[in-house]
Length: 455
Ligand code: NAD
Image (cartoon, rainbow, N blue to C red; front, side, top):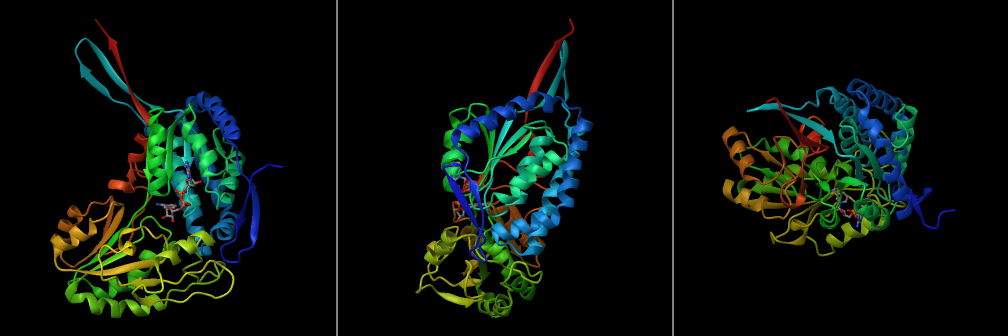
């Protein structure tokens, strides 16, 4: 029996789903050594064979959609429709990067006296540190390009949500991936997470989570000059101009900050509305907030589940205190579960901490602005820079404001932020590097230059 066990709690029922042993630093060391031992032969697999193995892995994941979605519902409280989308995202990202091995080519560069060629080589063992908010997709975003490029992977899921990742590791073996190529070790951040970051055989860390932990990881990785990809917090602005289709913007707004119960790094947790449209926008927003269907995650009609944990509920309550300027509040079930309603605040102070901090709950602050410059200034008045939306009918304005906002992922007249074939990542303290799309592959390889003298 392991000394350290973590109880996984169903956030909708507060029942214990499983008790999971937490890996020690010694177990992380053993897993990294297995990954290092598996690396030379995985790297040497012919590109077409590696592609086939990833496709097979994707198909096995797909065949287990019901089971993986049920686990995600149980450990994270996600509505079942969302959970099924998450499994599909993992499948799709595996398929997408299965197209990479044969295309990962170098260059030939003209030089005098010989031939100069470059090779794109894998790094070795990659450590993935995964958060609890999107356990399956975020696992896949690191795993798929890392494996496609010929690296081996040790993943540490979040304490709260290890069950889906553990099952995916079993499915990888069922799909025929060799032992040691992909391992999952549940563990605490401060023990297993740190051990992975510090391990001398780990060449790169991919981390998604809080900015505070991201800073620590970056500092620790400096010791071994490890590569890092960091996807951190956000406080993204949803900018609504008076010339926009206000009804459409208001109808779309709730899910821009309530999707995944607001536990989304891209959540539009600030809505900036041009002053002339401010009152009208709030009026239009209200019925849509009241219509957010929060309830049993197993009901396919449910749009919003509970928060992930009692601690996360306390955190959100700590921000929305009794004297908070609540303009609109939705409804949630009573009784067991870590429920928090969709909440719209109208703080008078633009530097209120509900406007500056990542709350990570279904809470947004609506604040007025005067003109384009003012909108860009307010949108950028944060240490974060992950995502944002711009609602306007003026294409020139949409482009000017898109160029002005310091964020990695912007959408015009939409809240869509993530597609697995386009680059995703943050400016400023929202992160370092890009995931997804073709850009991510470069982050899992080194470029080697070889000169062959011909004289
Ligand atoms: P966290 O950053 O502490 O945890 C994320 C992952 O990092 C987990 O796997 C955790 O075990 C691991 N970890 C924690 N400390 C570590 C360390 N010192 N070294 C290595 N790994 C470590 O996030 P949290 O505590 O679960 O959530 C706190 C807040 O972080 C949330 O309320 C939210 O604001 C933010 N958050 C953001 C994201 C995001 O996607 N941007 C995801 C999760 C949490």
